[in-house]
Length: 452
Image (cartoon, rainbow, N blue to C red; front, side, top):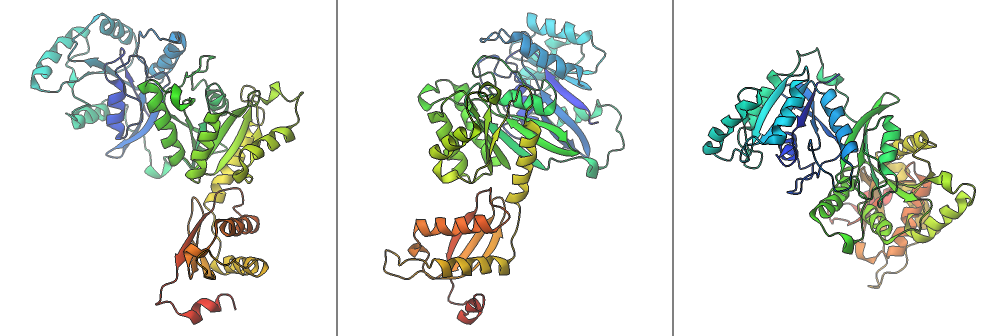
């Protein structure tokens, strides 16, 4: 089991900034408003072949605007208890205040190593001022500035030096995730509940308060011996309702998570109508050509009143271009059909990485063209396809060499995609079609031999 390093401290000392700084990516939202971080964020780090997990936690002592203090405290406590090393972060510019002393007293009661980190030391004068924190009882503070990238190496070296003794860990034994899937949807649709059900742990805060999850949170877990990452995202709001920086960053993170994930689970509330936010999200998923499952959650509330076929027709009527997207009916709270949902997501992941041989692809294309030749283009040119080849995966990308790419009508391209979807092993995932003009250097004879 990898050692964990948890970042703790009062609100607004820069814990999330240090987390992002150490990870090397902007994963956690950083904002001047206290209490932005609610759920734990965990990332795998490797420094000079020493692997460990870094954990960001909420601010100790926060008075949450949505009265989620107890839930946030529970997440902090889990982060503290699971840690092999604690980074106690303080604000060098504020100096030691009462809440810092309360946090220090709490940490002193633990039998865990603690590194005192004085953040926001943007210059030598602040490093001198940081000596005030000796009074907290954790020795000389490690000075740094996440904002100005000061003394990062010193901090990482100190972390590694204070980790438990190195176990014999082969880098090959570190299980990197086979698949990343993201859960998206509007507020209170059940994304965090589904994460907790899949991980069999209270990994995410769940409440009736809309907008409980504020950031995209990566959650690693194992299922059937395979490591996967589930990305929980904030529930999105209509554009005109995005009034704060938190809402803006949440939307941005959700979109980024869709782009980076292998599979998207688009959640709907079985008891509510499809909204404008739902349509915007589905459109973004389609634009980015991501494998997707439409997930109708809270089905236990509707099962006795409505057949699944009605919701299937309802989704197809609203998203006519995505008739191939599979649809799942689940109850995240009880776990009904959740394991089956994840198995289907893994199937889509495999489909998105499938390949077809060039001879088989061209036999399919030839039959499609004979059955339905391409119509004359608007430029009065007869479109002609010479041959096709798969040139990429995730999504499967098919390149068609042709005479005049602009002559192929959108309707004919949809026809070809439909044929490919019906004939190949990746029928439930997006297929990208690339039309490329044949080069003069390519021999007519070689090209025509493909179809003869």
